[in-house]
Length: 96
Image (cartoon, rainbow, N blue to C red; front, side, top):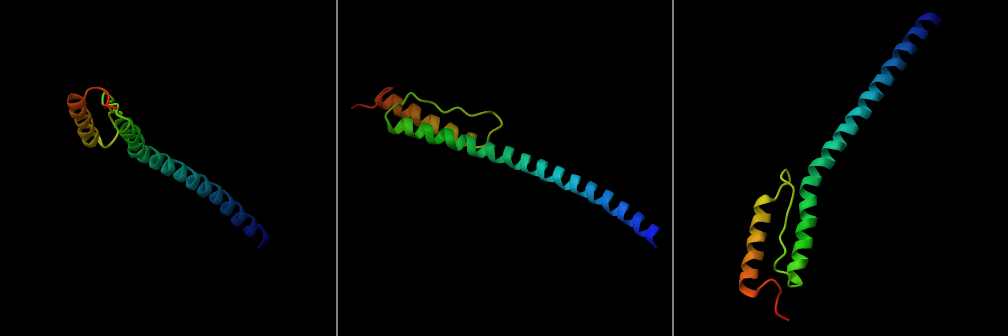
């Protein structure tokens, strides 16, 4: 009976270590993917906010640039078109 208990304990502990390692690997991969995907949206939003602040200050020559693999390309294109229209209408700086 004691011998059988030792075998079960060894099997349990080795399986528990493997399971803990797999769980840790899963969480690392999961959080890495979540970070990468959220960065593709949050990064451009920060750039858009800075760009809009530049427009608000009257700097119509400012243009917005984001990485190729980021989301929101259509919005960036429209915002750059807006800045171009404002620059043509008012010049590179807003009249004071």
